[in-house]
Image 1: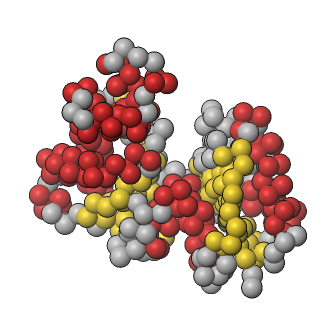
Image 2: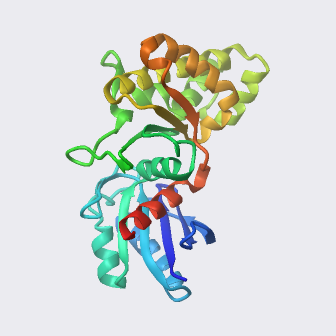
Length: 296
């Protein structure tokens, strides 16, 4: 049976998995991206993974989920941030198809996570789905007609850069997990290394006023951003992912409370807000599903 090698390339780690044609994980693992050593090192690390599995399995395709802005037609990362120096203009599709003779698809990591949720996760019964991932920044993806919407220049739904509080701060500067940790640390006169999302929510559950205030502030601003995007795209479903969203028992009621204020009732009443189901496997699964879709 043919296998698919799926990779999820982030600034910290490269996750990888071998999947069969039924989307069953045969093997999986991860390795350090070593992004600080430059884009060439990232490519070499991916080559090492492919070299390992091309000898072990009959591979049908290599599917890549990656940080950065991606031209899916060229299979190229045309822009990557400062955390991955020299990674911009990495021509994944060209490298892999020429060197290994394997079909290759490349997609942005948030789009891959969203597609996984759309195919077999929390958004599988939706028609027009908005997915937001909240972490060190905020990523967005919109799926309509069973396709990821890329926009004119493959930069659609880069919502983290959206201005929602005058012209002072953008969406991710107001609503990311890193912003929440910095805000709580400041209130506590503590170092940022002393606070993380898990600790903040533990304190929240025990009635800590500073943590309650900052979590509610985050949800209020997050709801503003969600409302703005909904006014433009009119999704039937919003799926929220990222590590912080594991606290859905707390966050869902808060987000819905503020969203009911920021979104007109005629839209709010028809909107379904859900939380991502696939966790850390979402990028790998989404890249795999895209490769399968292209091969079917």
